[in-house]
Amino acid sequence: MSRIVRGMGDDAAVVRARAICVTSVDAMVEGVHFRLGGDWASAAEVGRRALAGGLSDLAAMGAEAGEAYLALGLPPGFGEEEGLELLRGARTLAAQTGTTIAGGDVVSAPVLTVCVTVVGWADAAEELVGRDGALVGDLIGVTGRLGGARAALAVIEGRARAADRGALLERMRNPAPRLAEGRALAAAGAHALIDLSDGLATDAEHIGLASGVRLRVDLDALPLEDGVSEIAAELGLPAWELAATGGEDYELCVCVAPADRTRAQDAVNAVSDVGISWIGLAVDGPPGVSLLDQRGKELALRGFEHRW
Amino acid sequence: MSRIVRGMGDDAAVVRARAICVTSVDAMVEGVHFRLGGDWASAAEVGRRALAGGLSDLAAMGAEAGEAYLALGLPPGFGEEEGLELLRGARTLAAQTGTTIAGGDVVSAPVLTVCVTVVGWADAAEELVGRDGALVGDLIGVTGRLGGARAALAVIEGRARAADRGALLERMRNPAPRLAEGRALAAAGAHALIDLSDGLATDAEHIGLASGVRLRVDLDALPLEDGVSEIAAELGLPAWELAATGGEDYELCVCVAPADRTRAQDAVNAVSDVGISWIGLAVDGPPGVSLLDQRGKELALRGFEHRW
Image 1 (cartoon, each protein chain N blue to C red):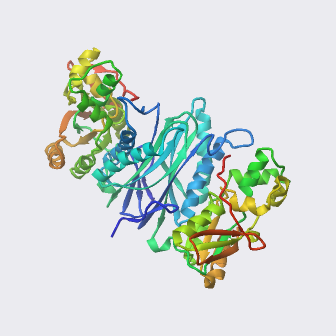
Image 2 (image 1 turned 45 degrees about the horizontal axis):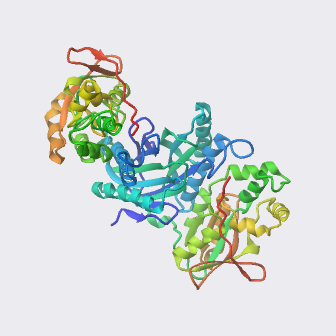
Image 3 (image 1 turned 45 degrees about the vertical axis):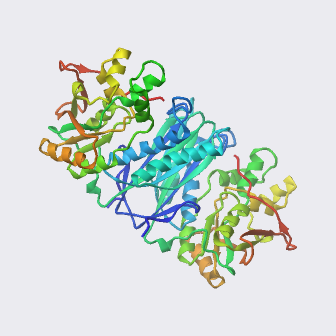
């Protein structure tokens, strides 16, 4: 029996529900969140990336992706062909993640505007993981490798060169939402989960504040995307700074009980090869985050508001 | 047990579902769909109106309103106070309709942009009514009275004067989604249902095309909003033209079997005093709509794309 009872073409989409509905809405605006053309992004990449950001929120709850709804604001001169290309980009990622694009809206707007609503599902509220469950003593983990999106931005802006420019830009333009990893971590007993859209420095702080614990992160332990060290050196910055403050890596940050370390690791490794790295500890203290360098000195860093 | 498990403040909202999930997404852009200030609309009215448009889509399915998600694009100079006023407008209508605003996003944008996602619920797909079920022989009904929004537009633009300017403008700025009437008509066996957002001429055509029948509408039978006749006379137009082509009245158009006429009427009258008028018949013929004047002459009219 198909999940979709009525898709596009009626007043609203009609979908067979599971017990728990998980919904996130994200808007992306040209000139604010992305730029079109050249090294920046094609229409297809904008569509794909907008959907990726929404699906990443579902991943960060441990939900299963269901439907997506796209509201497009198209500027003068943005042709039908480009609009279809944008949809095609979103559809490609939708197909890869088992998501159905079930509806949307198209209006005129002064600049390209993409508003994505994603709906995910679970069979019980207890299957999901919020930001607020971290406990003192929990290990902090991150999936994959960090800093790639911010390093790619420096390359596009001409401030640095990349040995493998193609791979780095691809990673930034086409981030992969960690849906399977999120569900695996939730099933493995994760206490708290968030996706890295604003940068670890900011997103780990969200967990700390919501959970009432202090997340102590060892910057030296951050897993670096290929090429990030070289680009950081060229920029005269420590590599961990790109990794801790660069937004839009769309990896997951998780807190698990020390006893569940191997279980969480095995769960992630069972679904993909992105891996998980352990980068710190939740401790008693003022709710928030502490970012420590190799000498244990606390650094004041904020997530870098990404503009691409 | 609260329907909302997690509201704002996490990666996504978490809601206890019923069997069938009904979702609609609408975007509204300043300068395209609305104007701010003066006689046009306040920030609160924009918020309320954006939500009303979404809820009207749920009404047109016969769904019960559940949650709403607001993505706001705020332009430079649109202050926090105005943003809160916009939200307050949406919240007022949400409270009146049993809708929970459960999440959203706020970004920068060149002009005020409001993207509303509404989610409604039903216990079975069979409780809902699409556009595609009208049968030859069905009676065509509309709730409430038509033409008010377009007449108000003429008044705001200074092309006509209204005897009761306040009431007319209020009707346009604060349309009421016909949620209870939609559910009542669905329960009374309606074959097809749509909301009048683009104007009867266009929306009735949607039913005709989707159902494979021809909707024959008697323009003389259209119920007119107070003041529409006078304003039409001042504009030198037949009153039915404002009623048939004016968008954004947000009334419902329904097709029912002739045997269900009284049942549908009683169902609507049981939930409100907006009433229902019978305006035509679904007939065999090329799928679409025929708009007939008092001499039975077919007129070519399109819905008026509303710009306020």
